[in-house]
Length: 86
Image 1 (cartoon, helix red, strand yellow):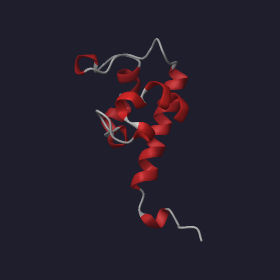
Image 2: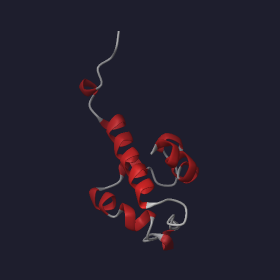
Image 3: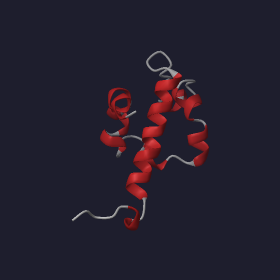
Image 4: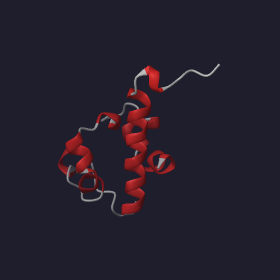
């Protein structure tokens, strides 16, 4: 999902899913549940988020979704979940 995110999402949502017009690491549970409606269905078109149905498949959108969840977990896990290597 990382390469797909970089190709289709990073320009607006930031490199490595950090920052941008909407930092996607902070998606609420509700927005995560509507991810495909937003990305493929154009649910937020009025707010400026176009549909990407003509650019990514549902499987590719799922890969991007998984990448975003992983990025959120990487950045927001407590320090004890990320032991420092010596």
